[in-house]
Amino acid sequence: MAVRQIALQTGLPPLVNPFGVILEAADGVEIDGTLVQGPVLDIASPGTSVSGIQIVGGGAGVVVRAPGATFRNVTVRRSDTAILIGEGSDAVHISESAFDSNRIGIQLAAPTGEVSLQRVRFRDHRLAAVWAVSAAATAHPPSIQIADSRFLRDFAGLVAINVAARVERNRFDDAQTTAVHASGGRAFIEGNQMQAGKGFGIYAEHLESGQISGNEIARNCSSGILLRDAGNTRVISNEVYQNAYGIVMMEGPSISPNLVADNLIADQVGDGLTLIGASPIVSRNQVLRNRQAGLRLSSLTLESGRTRTPSPLLEDNVVRDNGSDETERDQYQSGAGGDQAPASDCGWRTGTPSFAPVRASQQP
Image 1 (cartoon, rainbow, N blue to C red):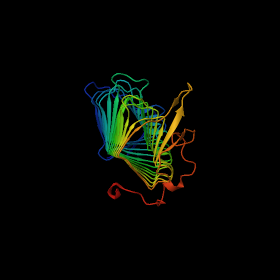
Image 2 (image 1 turned 90 degrees about the vertical axis):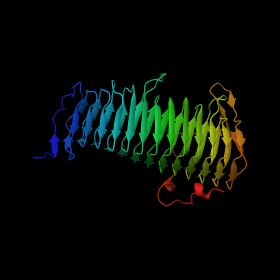
Image 3 (image 1 turned 60 degrees about the horizontal axis):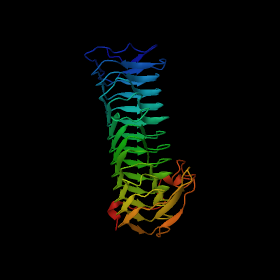
Image 4 (image 1 turned 30 degrees about the vertical axis):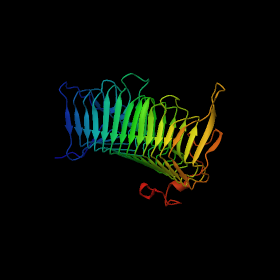
């Protein structure tokens, strides 16, 4: 007789077979770990495969402490952490799974290798759908790859600190803070949709290098993209429209400058492109119909008292039909597009747009 639900009083014994374990439930058996304070499943066997199970509750749905674990068609909900990837793990692959209403969906607690997520659905996480944080930058940082996945109403979508992050073809909707927050390490963010968030589409800071390209970022309460004190980073071919601010770049190195090129930056409530103490190469962008300045250059006074005045290289940009098409120059004031706080009134982010977006097909 098929068992539909298993209710646990304590966590299950660790899986320790040195040749790996296959844990498969064809009919989606539910393991109820509501009374379990630690992990429901503890995987210490290399090459373990888990598929078809559902886990409810637990201090962690699953803890991974060995390399080569794979998860397919797994659901974890109402747990503190759905899958905790700990020390000793590497080459962990999660696909076609769903994580709902946990505090954290996937957490890299002591990342040392590679984790990949593909076709995974995240919803309603109280801290972050994916939390990939390494204590310090290293010469060979751990990496996380996320592709073809969906994020809905999470407090934050991805938080990636001191890791190499590759984020491709995902959709982030209604994030309560930021869809993607990348700090330190390297970040490759391409082909994603980030819409109707209460904070930023992308907040990236202190990157060693990165590329933000081909993303559609719309109706977010703060900036579509904020790049802060990052180096060797290319922001190219994005569609950024109907956010509070479009693209904001703050500080950054004077040598090996960042690049902002071939972007559509249209219909923001505030400025289109804002450079705060930053001097990137700005080339071939379409900056259209933003309600305030198309391009704003703001000087920044550092803690040392020294002032950084933007001196970007501007080439072949189209700046038209904005509140001001002339380049605006001023002194940065806290509360402009570079702050992390969302706009005070962003009811425009949901429902029918208050003004028609300009899409790539409509560019002049």
